[in-house]
Length: 102
Image (cartoon, rainbow, N blue to C red; front, side, top):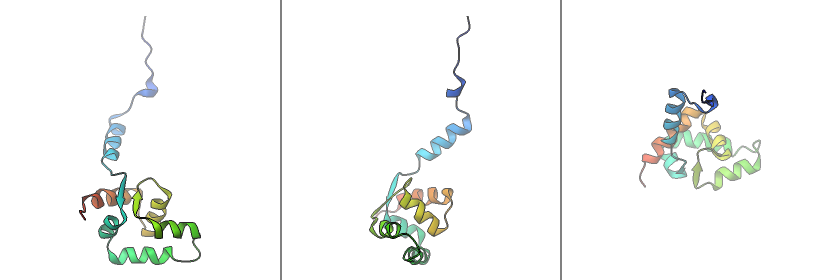
């Protein structure tokens, strides 16, 4: 008698590698660490856009009040958009920012 195998639980090598890579990305970094990695000019451009009254007030307040950036948060998604970052760019930001010692 054959033992049934649940194929839905199998993961490809690529999926395992992607998951392992994702595990290397810090879940959060400080705002200052991110600012240092992004650089003064690009950060200032993003913050100028964030101050634009055409953006929702709550979004602008969240960015102004942030002290920590959480990788999978709406605030970080908004900041990534303002910086023109792809998801891969955002991952690199978190990896590099975590290396900054304050």
